[in-house]
Image (cartoon, rainbow, N blue to C red):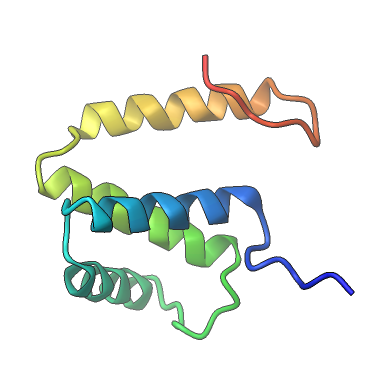
Length: 102
């Protein structure tokens, strides 16, 4: 019997791994992350007990983007550019295939 995957989709897992990596690299402290993420969830009316679906991880991404921006690790323009590149790559990728940036 195979165990259930920990994440519903690959991008959820990748976002989680990136966040852990940034924390372990000293970019931010986990308590600061948790406080900001809780505030984002509350602002969106989301509950921390969500199953980790797209709404939860969209809030997670919003928090991470805001945090790295506020800490001076990325400009709003760089974040927007990366978001647009991912959207173009996603839309150009056949269903079921991995998404690759240009």
